[in-house]
Amino acid sequence: MSEYDQIVKILRQHGERITIQRRLVIEALLATHAHMTVNDVNEHIQEKKDVHSLAEPTIYRILQWLKELELVSQTDMAESGIVYQIIGAHKHHHLVCLNCGVSIDVADTLFDDMRERLAREHGFHARIDHMAIYGYCSDCASEDS
Ligand SMILES: [Zn+2]
Ligand SMILES: [Zn+2]
Image (cartoon, rainbow, N blue to C red; front, top):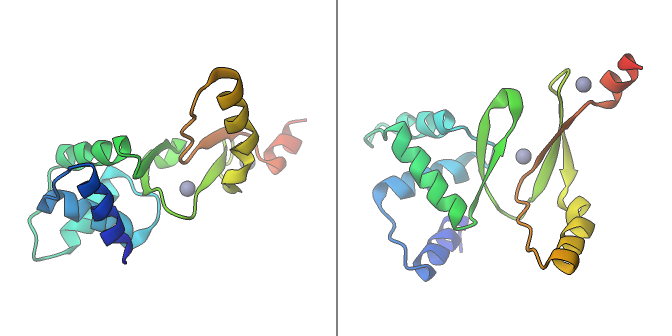
């Protein structure tokens, strides 16, 4: 089953309808598997000559809908803006340097202890989909001291 079919299956299980607009946004996110801003999604859709373009507020609403269904993550990546991404098998997070802007990928297992502790101590089910942690990279931190 393709990734698109899997997503459609989940949406149907939630009783959601797949409109043309929704399909276009999901396909755009799956086509790149990268971080995408609303504008990136829009550009990707416009590249297809056979379809009508979508208004950015429509794209934004669809992304929020997918986020609520836990299919898409929304992350503020500082200089890169707010980015969206399908929450797939390659779950990861970022360390973003406030000085030089470098972004370092970190594994999701980094948050295992935190998730476990939040559940144990607060009964809280943390949803850490795609996180950006701000700070200073090793180069910039050593420059500073
Ligand atoms: Zn990422
Ligand atoms: Zn840096």
